[in-house]
Image (tube, rainbow, N blue to C red):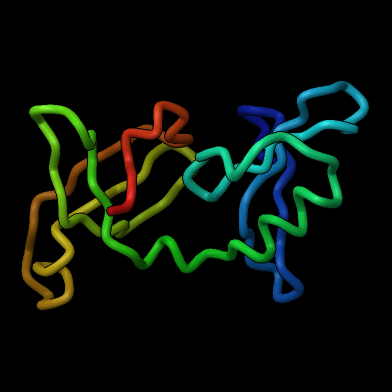
Length: 120
């Protein structure tokens, strides 16, 4: 469980965390599924349905390219996630990391509730 937010971790059979369920009611009858980045995955639903949605979504999005602060003048595109921790998401230039080149890291607070990160 993510103690900071009261979210319940959802794991696959192999023990890998695939996301979180944010309780919207005290009895967990209504939850908001959230990806590993903390982004809402669809709308609220029942606990089991949320678990299934997160399991189907998986973790593959972590290997994709990301845009930081899309739709702003300070947008930075072509990023990859190099580290995800309970405090932050660390990003770097996608192509530079694939070529094993040193690159400056950017940081976004976790969970990314403001959805500063998006995929294109």
